[in-house]
Amino acid sequence: MMEYVMITGASTGIGYALAKEYAAHKKNVILVATREERLMQVAKEIKEEYQVETAWFVQDLSEIGAAKELYEKVKKAGLMVSVLVNNAGFGCVGECATIPYEKEEQMMILNMISLQELSKFFLQDMLKRKTGRILNVASTGAFQPGPFIATYYATKSFVLSFSEALRLENEPYGIVVATLCPGATVSNFPARAGKKPSKTAMPAEKVAKIAYREFEKGKHVIVPGFFNRLARRLPKGVKSRYVSWMQRGLMKK
Ligand SMILES: NC(=O)c1ccc[n+]([C@@H]2O[C@H](COP(=O)([O-])OP(=O)(O)OC[C@H]3O[C@@H](n4cnc5c(N)ncnc54)[C@H](OP(=O)(O)O)[C@@H]3O)[C@@H](O)[C@H]2O)c1
Image (tube, rainbow, N blue to C red; front, top):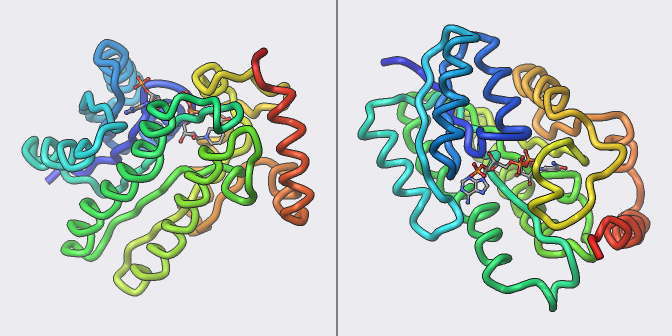
């Protein structure tokens, strides 16, 4: 059976860059996102450029039950996922009380529930095969509370905590689990979150290259960028004050 790397949120940004990075290493890829036309275009582009097999699934992972639906579609198509990259996610910026609750509800389902369920379903298959790898995308926002982006940062703390626990649980069975914690990265993220782009954002391709290399090396919490790694060492209180100042500045008026 042919092996695939499945990447959620592979139509743009970090997920798209990761899909190309894996394909450049001769891995077949399964792309997941909500926009069919864009997925078809990316699948074609990757297949032609890297000579690997590509498959794609349209799935809105911000709905309850979507992860199960996607898992069943992948099984029905007879595709074997040897690496799962849970990357799809978005953020909501602003004062929590003023952000529409439906928007944050969808974000919480996408960033946490779908990620947790996809990890669980594909992990069950990996355990049967005694091999498999899961890379979950959190954020440097996972390391401290984030005023003016509170719920998003909390979802990313969930991703980090869950993934680290999953790693320790499954290490003895030969399953590798790691967490990618990017800082500001050039992508559609700021526009979707309703904020201005950061001037210090890293290119998504650079983040993907580091993520691939460090994941292959066996690093379990991957923080791309020297300043992001440095900032991680600051006391939580200092970091939260800084985030509060920064996010307030990035909020679109
Ligand atoms: N950019 C940053 O500064 C930054 C920093 C730290 C962490 N991250 C994390 O990195 C991950 C990737 O974000 P990005 O920066 O690359 O942003 P992006 O360019 O907006 O990409 C998000 C991806 O997720 C997909 N997606 C969005 N909603 C979805 C849904 N409901 N169901 C399925 N797929 C969905 C999008 O595709 P469609 O729109 O086609 O569905 C797209 O492929 C996210 O988890 C984000 O939280 C980003």
